[in-house]
Length: 470
Image 1 (spheres, rainbow, N blue to C red):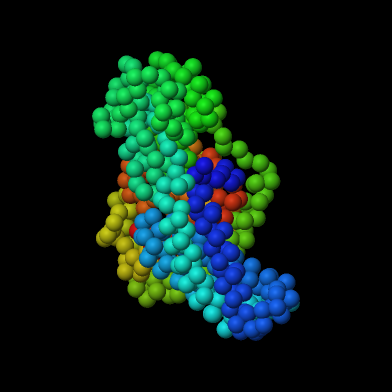
Image 2 (cartoon, helix red, strand yellow):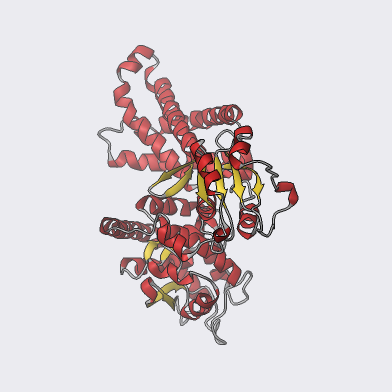
């Protein structure tokens, strides 16, 4: 099993294991630092271990939280071990003042974490120990240990989409593709290099060539599926999974071209309880209030910078009509990042190196300060903190006619940040919008408070590393 599903969200199993290992290593590193700083006598240290544990747990948890926010564990796939450790250094540095803040809130039981020498020494020990343990983990486990062997039944359009869309290291981190089995009378769109010639039955083939999963990616099931053969395979312990569900699990997005309304109706997800509604609204208010307090100095400086560049009479804010929950139109507020006459000829897509953007606007867009006034939209309830980004009515009308299921993104409140913002760059054309909709539908289908918290935490990485900003 390469994925763990928590509250309907898929998390890669090695990330979970590595996170637990990191947690234990960091707790040990902090305990080691305290031992050298305050004890020295091992038996005396063990007798007082119960007083140390709360501080070690908070130290470890704070560091792990920041690592998740900076995308430390995922970064190894794209940036290698060196990139992973560089982000780890950044996380350890950021965590020191956070641990100090935790000490101020709970001085009665976080005695040792209040020591700056213990924090810094624990961070140094933690960095070296993490480097050693992670190297041993990756060397021992191997890159294919947690991957499932997958066989795809079908070689037409749906199979080709799985083959082409799930080919990056990030999308292939959970499985090894053994090949495609074409069905009779089905058009073949897969290269012969990846086709499997099975002269016998599927069951006989998997007995000789074991696989963990068979993905059914047939274009037209009405032409017949080898149901008896698939049942025999299932009885052999092989999991049978629908192509659209497999695509969703591995890519964390919904394949628009593969899903039907029937799949949306009968698949797991799209369930919202009143308890979730109350919890989400509470999370919105806490998150927006915290961000407002933290971002107020930046907002004041931004307002001053806009006035200096464009004059005292120039407007600071820019309001636009956007489409919200159930298609209702509301006004979203942003810091003005374009010239005052930017849309004198009508609404157009924002583009890379847009000439209409001011110098101040270019900077605040890159670090997403221009979005901060939307905190007030979250507080007044027209937006959520997490959800699909709201779009303008004129574009919604155009896109709803061209992109299937586009109107479904209005089943939830639009958000200040969202799953698509974490996973995909800025959309400035129809095809990019189609790709972002795949992520938005995944969020709507699998939304939970856990997923909202993960998105809020990982938005830090988007801001710091300027993912998707324009």
